[in-house]
Length: 198
Image (cartoon, rainbow, N blue to C red; front, side):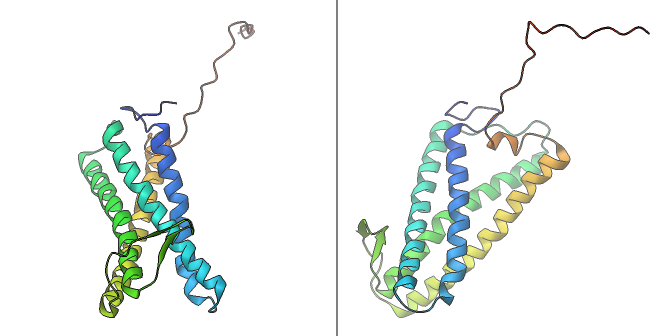
């Protein structure tokens, strides 16, 4: 499989970015939806810290993915795709990229406005984006949560469209984001099938 994208399919690097970000989004969504119900204590603090670290990781991976896409290009539209579907897909992809930038950044602002330190897996600290500010913290928290639910809706639409194309249109929309299967060729030494009498 090619590392770079081709006109027909996504390359290995783009596929790695895509599926790694998908996994991290699922993990961070689960943590984000459950961590508020945890009892106060060291475990809750560590879970919150993990949530922030994964969010920063997603932010970095999305930035790298954008740079790689600019460098490696993107496949052409699947043959036979109506123009309106291609335009919707392009807009959806753009919105997903924007949200995957905006959500971690709003979380960074939220954390900074609350006056908490921000660490990446306890390896190093990141600077605060803003000073401590209660009103900004409340606003950033609301924005962070709203953007998350918008992302959920778009991700569900994106996945549903991919499965629709795969199951009902039988095209390569989903397959070209999956590792290519090697075609099994018939052995040249294999005997020809026996002929049967009519």
